[in-house]
Each structure stands twice: as structure tokens, then as C-alpha cells.
Length: 236
Image (cartoon, rainbow, N blue to C red):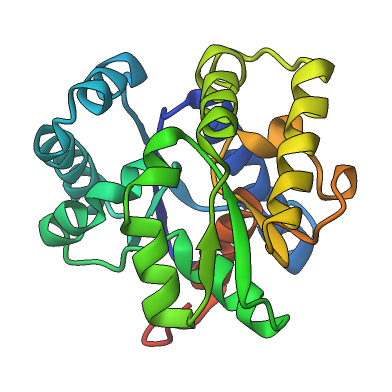
């Protein structure tokens, strides 16, 4: 089994979910008492969030690149960044390491394409919904168009993530509000919805919404398990 380097803490609430999913995924495939071989570097999210607000993505890239490099030096054979938003600095992380970087867009794009989705709604932080890194990679690699909520709904989705989910608060009223956002994405032409923040699955389940839902946390963790259990020289 290959060693996974998990770069988390953004927030630790979803990083804990990654830890659960990675270990459960290995146990389901190998049985008995098997669990994942992994290393975790958890950053202080307050520092990263300040960089996000300031738009200082270069500093964030340096910070996470150094953390990923430390994981590689400690024995990680691939890096999993347990957050959608910070994939904005994926190129800086990839440039700092010599092992594979399992990009969160790719397993989601593969799942969408396999099911014939051509236009998908995206829920996430304001940064994820408004910056081009998700949209461009999904379009280039999978030919899938993104639909994002309108300004008011983007503000709602972002606020719930930072003020509630990253702090461990699960509010049924926010779940209902998110269901409404998904309904409006469907009315805007989305064929499916992407839970494009690693905390959203803590609040909202696929069965809660009318559109087919793709949880990036689950799909990303599955890709990491596949990599960990694959033979060296094979891609994930």
C-alpha cells in the first residue's frame, strides 16, 4: 500500500471526514483490520483564510507548497489537498513536489463525464465559485460547463461554509436554504450539482436535493484510495 500525504486543516472539520473516508475505503477493499497508510499535515486555517481575504494567493502557494514538500520528505507518495478553494494554488504545490498531486477536479470530472453530464452547478466558497481554476480545468479536461449561483446565493453558500460548517455547526435551516440554491441551479440549466466545498457534505446529502449530486470530498478520497492500493507505475 502506498503512503498518502494529506494536506488539511482547511478546515479540520472536513479533514476529519477525509481521514474517515480514506480509512474506510481501504478497509472495505482489503477487509479485516486494514487501514490507510497516510501522513497528515494540518495547517492553521486562520492564517490561510487571511491570505484568501487579502487575495495573497502567492503566499498561500508558498505555505502549502512547503507543507506538501515536507510530506513528501516524510515518505508521502502522493499529495491530497483536502480543500477545493486552495486548489487555486495547485500549480505552486505541484511545482514544490516530485510525487503525484491528486487534483480534486479530476475524479469529479470523470464521474460527471461517465454519467453524461454536460452542464453542472457548483456550490463552494465564493473563491471556488468565482475564480477560474475549477471552471477552466473541468471545461478543458472533460468538456463540462459550470453554472454558479447568482450573487445572493453565492453569498449565502459562502457564509454558511465559513460561519457554520468550518466551525462544526450544522443548521437544518441552512440545509433547506442550500436545497433552494440547488433548485435554482436546476432552473438555470444545470443537469447535476457539485458539492464543491469539502465541508458541504457535512450539511447536505445527495438525497436531499433533486439534481444528481457529486460530493468532491467522497470522490477525491476514493481516488486517493485507488492510488494507494494500485501498483507503482500505475496512475490513479
